[in-house]
Length: 115
Length: 114
Image (tube, each protein chain N blue to C red):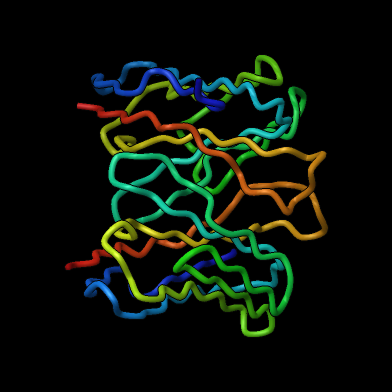
């Protein structure tokens, strides 16, 4: 089983719809992140959370919101989807207790298409 | 604002050749990460470089970090087809400890031909 699980894996929806992408992890990590990947642009940070009471905006948070329901769950919402939010979305985790010398661990991604 | 630049962005090379991918970043950071991504797949961690002069090697890949020059390199020795992938460098934008968000380069799309 994957340590970082994203659902759904693929989603096609229409402009204006509300979308929620979910991420759950079994690694016991306290820190979780959402990134989006666009062709030729690398990954960009949307939001990150250091624990259930801590939410921080990343580079491109406009148009997105997040919820940290538990240490193991971090969801990303698009309140009113628009076509330029079509992208590949990744959830990642990291472990505070092991220090910053450990990499972030990524899920398999959610491919989101907004028509 | 932290910026991370990789070059080249696209590289086609022959098996058996050596080559280097460069990663420059704009502000002080002592934590740099290299990831590999295969088409349609997630990101796989390759190296974590934490200090000036750090060098790490795994198989045909070797990564180094020069924090004074704000430069990291990923060197490929005697390339083989299985190394074809997109390689990303990423830099942490918070200093002083603690995991945090990463700023990624745009990636180097590497194709290794027989």
